[in-house]
Amino acid sequence: MDSQNLELSIVVPLLNEQDNIGPLYDQITQTLSGKYNYEIIFIDDGSTDGGFGKLTQLHQSDSKVRVIKFRRNFGQTAALSAGFDHARGDIIIALDADLQNDPADIPKMVDKINEGFDVVSGWRKKRHDHAIRRLLPSMIANWLIAKITGVKLHDFGCTLKAYRREILAEINLYGEMHRFIPALASWSGAKIEEIVVNHRPRTAGVAKYGLGRTWKVILDLVTVKFLGSFSTKPIYVFGGLGLITALGSMASGLMVLYQKFVSPEHLAMNRNPLLVLTAMLITTTLLLILMGLQAELLVRTYHESQNRSTYVIKEMLESPDSKGV
Ligand code: UDP
Ligand code: MG
Image (cartoon, rainbow, N blue to C red; front, side, top):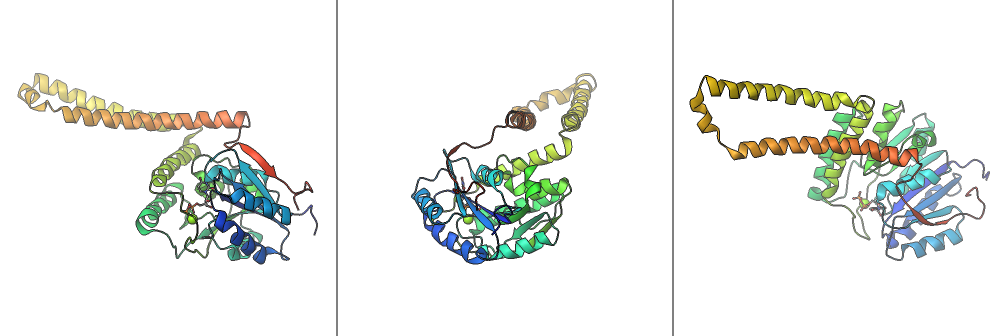
C-alpha cells in the first residue's frame, strides 16, 4: 500500500487497561486489515499496570502500531489531543480502550465521512453503564450541552467519533473538552452527523470516572459558551451581569432610604444575618465564575502563544519507516 496516502488514524487513549489491549488490537485489525491503509496510535496516559509492555510487543510485531507514552496521567482529553497531534491519516477515529466501543462500527463512520460529513459522532443508544453514576448525569449533561451549544446530538460523551483531519487541526482541547469538539467544529461551519453505534459492558479493568466529572463537564460548557460567543466581547458577559447588580443595588438602596425616612419601624425587623450571608455567597459565586473565565483565556494564551502542549511525552514508539506505515 502507498505509505504517502494514509486513510485512517485510529486514536486510543488508555489508562491501566492491560487486559483490554490485546482483544482491542485484534478487533481493530480484524475490521480494518486489508480494507484500509491505517495506523493505530495508542496513548498510554500514565498507566501503572503492565499495559506499556503489551503495547511495546504490539509495536514490535506490527508496524501499524505507534505508541505515545505520557510522563504521568494527564487525562483522557490530553491523551486524545496527543493522538490527534501525531495522527497522519486523512480521517481520524477516536475510541475507548476498554472495549465498550466496538471497532466493527468504524467502516460505517468512514462511509459517512466519505459522504461529505466533517465529523461523525457515535450515539450509544443502548448504553451498558451504571444507571445513577453514569446514565443519569450524562442525560442531564447531553440535554444541557445540546441546549446551550445549539448542536443537536444525543450523545456528546461517546469517544467513538470520526473526524476529517483538517477539522481537528484548528481545535485545541483543555479540561474535559473532547466532548465539545462537534460543537466547536459546527460553530466553525463543519457538517456533523450522528450514527447509532454498538456499546458493550466493560468486562476488564475499572471505570475511571465517577460523579465528579459531571461538574467539570458543566464548567467546561460554560467556558465553551463564553469562548464561542463572547471571547471577542467579554464586556457583554461581565457588563451584562454588572447591569443586573447595578439595578439590584439601586433598588435596595432606595428601599433603605424609604425605610429610614418614611417607615422606620421596618428597620428593626430586618436584622437577618443569613440574608446578608446569602447575598455574599451569591456575589462570591459570580465573582469566582467570572474570574475562572478570565483565567481560561489566560491559560489559552499561555499554551497557544508559546506552543506548549497540555501533556508531556516520556517516550514514543514510532515505526522504523518515519511515515508510520
Ligand atoms: N482514560 C485515559 N485517561 C484517564 C482516564 C481514562 O486515557 O485519565 C481512558 C480509559 O483507559 C478508557 C477511556 O479513557 O480507554 C474511557 O475511560 P472509562 O472507560 O473509564 O470512562 P467511560 O467509559 O465511563 O467514559
Ligand atoms: Mg468505558
